[in-house]
Amino acid sequence: MFVCNFKFNRKLTIKIAIAFLVIIFCIIFGVVGKKFYDSVSTFKVKDEIKTDYLDVNSNNYSDILKDSHENIDKYVGKKIKFVGFVYRLYDFNENQFVLAREMIISSDNQAVVVGFLCDCNDVKNMENGAWVEAEGVIEKGNYHGDLPVVKVTCLKKVSAPNDEYVYPPSGSYI
Image 1 (cartoon, helix red, strand yellow):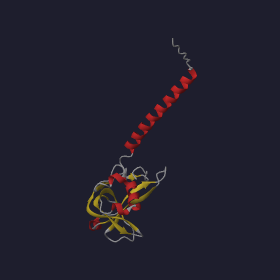
Image 2 (cartoon, helix red, strand yellow):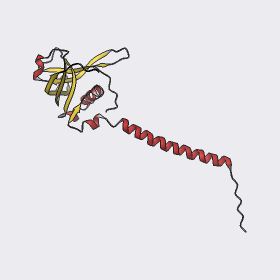
Image 3 (spheres, one colour):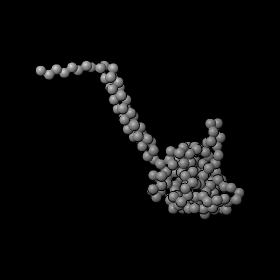
Image 4 (cartoon, helix red, strand yellow):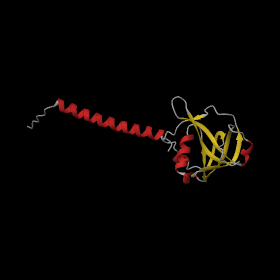
């Protein structure tokens, strides 16, 4: 006759069960966190510039502007389409302007003008502050240093968008 004496240790069993549940929760949390991170970060400038056409809007304006200035070479030759207002400086030639937006920089709504330097023959008749939609190709230019310049191929007057302001780069698109 074979007798097996088995003693059940309740405290050890509870510790093992808790450790097992903690491991399971960590795995689930890791998988859910990764899926959430992937879904939030799927739209990035890096992904967007693989296409031939950049559609710049209020949400990605400052991110693309910043990245294009920091990495000019990866934007050269890309087509771009965006809306802004005509902004000229005293030392621009008659074909140059900034297609600008006002970027909110503080909680009390202080703003600065930011934008892409553009080159276009048709801008001579546009007054400062006119809202326009521009399509063009990004080239490497020089204005107090290297920067991206949009050679505008199509310029048309539009009404001001509902979201006239842009916000500082979030870094989520870069």
